Length: 135
Ligand code: TYD
Image (cartoon, rainbow, N blue to C red):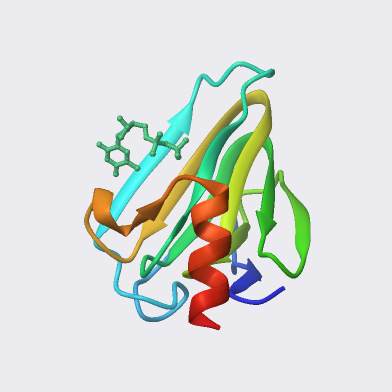
């Protein structure tokens, strides 16, 4: 789907365990300016419900599993993140919702910019309008 992509990272496995390195402008297709993680989310909670005008992100479920709905006025897709070697890239102008946080899910998010409230569109109707005017 447009502006989204599933990435599979290389794992360094040895007798001591597994290690995945992530580097900005390399494995991650932008300069990483912010990192946050979401955890201890009750199973009946659905969150997100926004799009970004400029921000790019990569979402990685480093423990447990979570479902991500990504959506535009044209198409939608549900991606299950349940493996620390999988990352979901989400670029600008994509609506997202996160739900079904299971098994102690920890969702790590790498972002291309600092937190900026003005970059968010939090109402689906406004997002649809913005999307249609832009495309
Ligand atoms: P929120 O945007 O509601 O999370 P999501 O949409 O991913 O479910 O963020 C929850 C709270 O955390 C809200 O008060 C804003 C704050 N916050 C920051 O202060 N910095 C950040 O980088 C993020 C992502 C959120």
